[in-house]
Image (cartoon, rainbow, N blue to C red; front, top):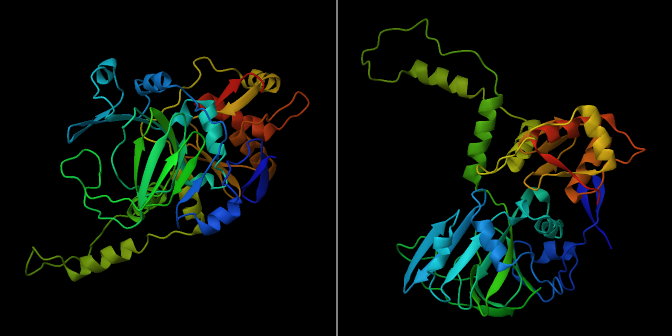
Amino acid sequence: MNACNSFGGQIINTPIPYISLGNLTPDEFLQEYWQKKPLLVRKALPGFKGLLTRQELVQLAKNDEVQSRLAIKNNRQWELKHGPLTNRDFSRLPEGKWSLLVQDVNHFLPSAYDLLLKFSFIPFARMDDLMVSYAPAGGGIGPHYDSYDVFLLQGPGRRRWEIAADYDPKLLANAPLKILQNFKAEQTWLLEPGDMLYLPPNYAHHGIAVDACMTYSIGFRAPSHLELIIHFLNYLQDNLETDSRYTDAGLKQQANPLEISREMRQQARAILQKIKWNASDVEDFLGIYLTEPKSHIFFDRPAYPLSFKKFIKTIREKNIQLNLKSRMLTSRHQIFLNGETYKVSQPAKKNLSRLIYRQNLFSKNHSDDETGKILYQWYVNGYVVITDSI
């Protein structure tokens, strides 16, 4: 049975069903567990064998477009190597005392993108990425906590998870990772392939590989208040319009030239009170901020782009999909894609939203000029790619 999601009031059918939450519906999970307490789901994805092999994950970690880390424990000392990693990085690893972590795997594997869609009972605005980790038996990255929600889906092999809600936050000194120094588990579970553990923010957890194993971590965005404020002020800076400058035509000599005068303070206060915003500013800011590509992400434009006429003909015969690195959100009358805003009609918005689920937008007998023009702009920017029909 297909799952459903909502885009600005429009219900969209997704061809990819939600991941199992045991005997819970998505609404029940959100009400009872989301950001409240952990949930263990046995056989959340029955028969899950993972999406790539250990060697394929290692190869991905060597790619200079991929964010990867190699956490190594030598005796009691931790070492952290950042990618792109090399053959030499993997040549002298201590037995059982290391872990490889690769971020944004959904940017490189369509199957990883599809796996994220299984979690779309959580709004796309909150979704971050799919991280895949590999560890030999005994490997892990130490007890720690995250400031965001995470689903830990077990791939091949087994991992033991220890968790605690009440813990000493003191960290291990001089470690490159934020490892808890005095962690004591309150609950312990052994996860087998297809099992899944949900953890709310700030739950301490420690994953130890029982066998050589891979874990698929679905993480969600949780910006700090300060981060939101800073980015919003930057947005206002780019969108405020004022050409006026500070003036003081009635300036008088001061007894103490070092003193900031009362008149200057009053005028500065009056100027700063011009900083105003409304609901539309917040809406636009969120769409731009939440779809802005991360600093290491770049899009390749087609070297020899098709003409608009040939482009439309081609996508009717083949198919067009979002670049896996693209991020899309919608609001009332616009679509946000990769930090850019597009004012669209409701029919075009509904049609373009189907790109999230990699559905065909055009057929040989169907035409939509507005959708076609926007798609062509995205194609020239490298935000969408032409593929064979699915």
